[in-house]
Length: 214
Ligand code: TMP
Image: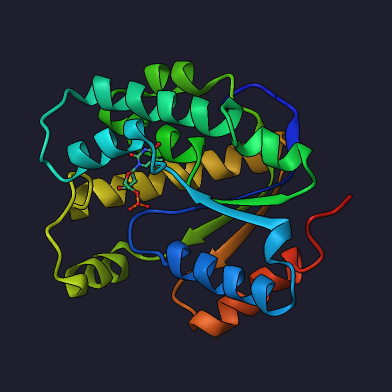
């Protein structure tokens, strides 16, 4: 748990283990905002980002590049620093009155890198990042998420192993509970990611349809 920080208004984060469907839900949201003429008011983004640092991380995830776990943990933090504070970053967009939706944020580092390099380093690298206003936590049994990943038929990334994902899910559950207790400035919404895709979309929409709030 990272000590209380202010939250960024109109900043919304989606989190969960691999294969929970956050990316599909963000696509549906983007389409829905466009359909009601609000495409200009919303920004959709993700971590790792598509910058040079993000590309380096993707290479490490796909095993194209062999890096120490500590290096990967630092790259995630560096990527996030630019994502939040950099040019055309999250703070700049929200300051310009937009709502920003991100597929993953520092909670991913607390959960995944908390396991790969230890909680203390993961926490240290991420202690300066502000909270989002809203956090959607997608939860799913690992059996289901792993079978979704298998069905993609793609080469698996370094963290896409059943035992690791099981441990990551436990970490997330612990982290989410801690923030629920001690960070009232961030609203946390738990999503049952086994439900029908449209049903999940409707639930999320009911929380975000009026964003950005002025
Ligand atoms: P993705 O599958 O959502 O694109 O995420 C890429 C992988 O990177 C996924 O296995 C989660 C992992 N990850 C971390 O380990 N730490 C982080 O800080 C982030 C943002 C992602």
